[in-house]
Image (cartoon, rainbow, N blue to C red; front, side):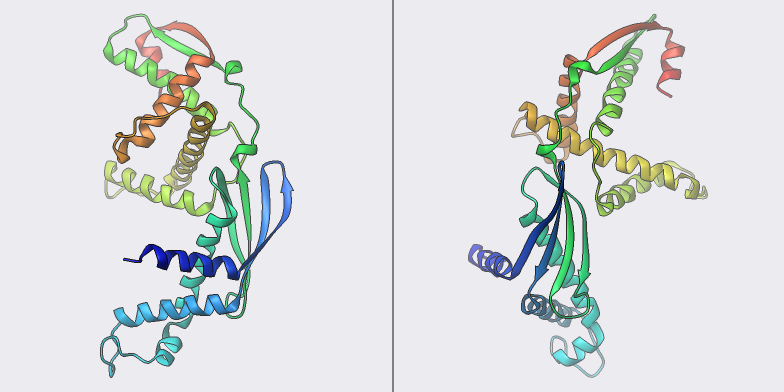
Length: 274
């Protein structure tokens, strides 16, 4: 495990070798050009090669004793790609402070050698306009023959209206990598519920849309909670924190919105929630 001093030294090295400039600002969106000195990139590549050398086995060489020249020849491209990925992820934390969302991060030069250059687009969530939740119109369905199940379905219908509005509350670009990670989780869950022989190809677009909606909603929920000082108990289990925070934010929005009521039959209620 790296010591705190090791981490501090690494952060200092990155800071001294990183150069970034804001090149564009439109509303809450800002673009930055970034550059890392070649020396730091090369040092990171060497670290990656050293790590690779400890894990791979090559005929004619003892474990952990593969010459650097051989590692470079066989794994140089892989090591540089890993080093670049790590540096770009690290610069994101420096360029984008808390409350900012990385919309894109791309390498524009130095993929093969020399200084590493890139462009990062950041959405500063704090700069997005406030949402007037008091102007939000919601409809609460009231079943004519209420029971616990119908009441839960009516509540779900109301909450889904709020989540739909949150997903489109602000216009910002979500990093494709975030969507892909969430899509993988959504697809895995879908595969467990469907017949193994069923083809998911036709569902791919729909599942990806669900994944992006989840990411967008989570971001807006977190930002709304920050702006309205909505908190959850510190002892809330990590696996439940997102769900509990979403529930508190949704309940707060419902308390602020214009909620009308419409009496429906249980059948109409179930048709409304699909």
